[in-house]
Length: 354
Ligand SMILES: Nc1ncnc2c1ncn2[C@@H]1O[C@H](COP(=O)(O)OP(=O)(O)OP(=O)(O)O)[C@@H](O)[C@H]1O
Ligand SMILES: [Mg+2]
Image (tube, rainbow, N blue to C red):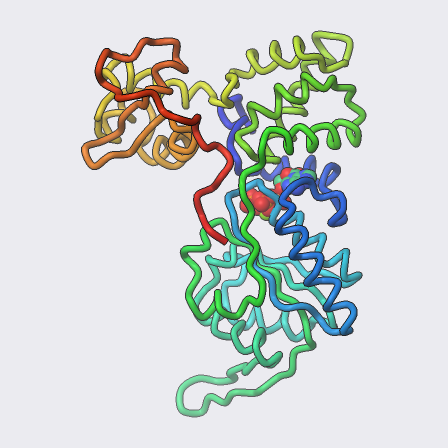
């Protein structure tokens, strides 16, 4: 991460993947929250072990940073099996996938990350492997081509996707178990932060953990990242202990506000409110006002602003909600919003169904 702007991005940088390994839970019992998914997975794995056969193929779906890769590794650990890891974009030709499949040993877990990005021919090969534990490898071209059937040892496919809507029907149907991960509540993230702090040897007070949790956008990856930054601050500017005061001061330095918005998120809202009187305004106009590409505003900022109930996308353009005016400390123009909303924004449901 080169600057503070990416601090609350849910996507991991390459460098960060190493930092994540140390705090990644290894067993189901250490996996915080997501109780429904955890219970269901536990049943699936235990019953398979009792029968002595590999469990059904498992699809893990949900936004980035919520624990899909972590769960895939946990599945293998709980089964006591080996795990092979690859990803949709890495499988360029179906031959690559055939090589992986035929080298699996009985009971292995094959983890395919970003499975929605797998190429069509490889996807079709995967169908027969998942269903019948065999693949047809085509040798030669044109009329002389022959298909050689090869056996695949019984295995469990664990697929992960951030875009389950892009999966084809036949692909989805071949998973016996689909787990949908939801955003975490602040209380869950607080527990997660306490655990990570223990592992990293960072002394943190309860109120500080709660403060960081509240700014983490419902996402474990962001919570762990903010913890590392707050720790840096506490070590350099204080005595190493993360107190509420240190946490707040650190997050101010890193420009992460009390809802977890960063500078660009706030820039978008401020432009919307101050320059366009709350909108509606078109995406490209808004993007020019904050000096960003429309794609960045749409894909990086807006998903969370919408989820946090601060911005609405309407057919006429982007609109700041009443909560946005208030979050920026502005008074909304009289009469522009009806009765105050009955409840606060729903930050912790990703809006998809399992
Ligand atoms: N339930 C959890 N309990 C404890 N730590 C968690 C949990 N879920 C995620 N984490 C932590 O959050 C980080 C991100 O999790 P993970 O890499 O599994 O996310 P992901 O869903 O695979 O993200 P991506 O879509 O970007 O691949 C990891 O460091 C992991 O330790
Ligand atoms: Mg992952």
